[in-house]
Amino acid sequence: MKKSALLGMFSLAVVSAAAVTATPPPAASAAPKAKAERQICRTYRENGSRLGGYRACHTAAEWAELRRQMIANLDRMQTRQAMNSPSPNGQ
Image 1 (cartoon, rainbow, N blue to C red):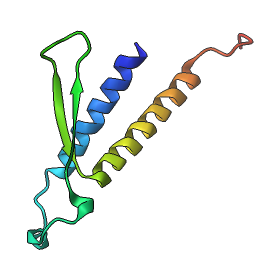
Image 2: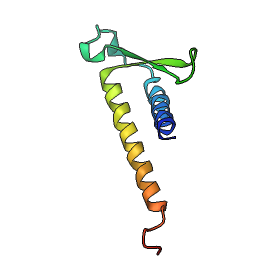
Image 3: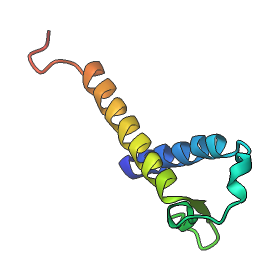
């Protein structure tokens, strides 16, 4: 259950980051790409399937932002779960 929730959060982060990166680049981007702007691609496989999976390509800065968002979302979910759980002394 936890693994699928984590995968779902990561997928949500990837989709939201894709919407952010879908904006047209500025006119100055015609210059050669710096090493920091190089695309890094990762392939994700779906457990239990030979055909399932996808490939995601982002820059190093975008991967760092996705990781930061995923950690923030996980933190938010854990805090929300702790706030909704009954107290141990029954109050």
